[in-house]
Image 1 (cartoon, one colour):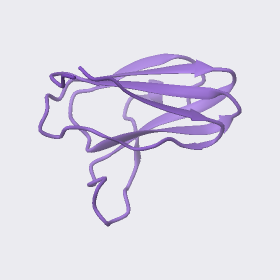
Image 2 (cartoon, rainbow, N blue to C red):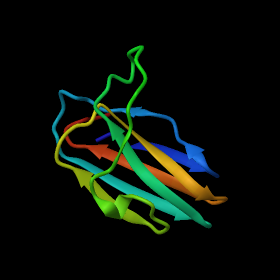
Image 3 (cartoon, rainbow, N blue to C red):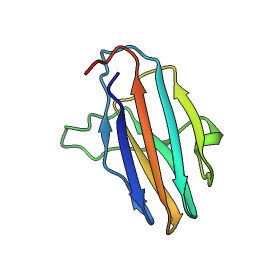
Length: 104
């Protein structure tokens, strides 16, 4: 598995992490927090390489929405892309994504 790591310091959106929509659906997520920060994990089923605007949806697990501490979660399906949103705070949130079956 190749880990994808997205980090964001201060309020705003991280980069977008496209996932392998033809890969296995088991995806592990872990958010690590440094300092004071409030974050949300979001996903989209829209094509991150397309020309249309992406529609971002908060993760269905409330443990990954508006959180301030380290958390783990998962997907049982493959979204097209994932991002981390820092809602507030001056700290840093880092999201590690592991999609089963993807090797380096």
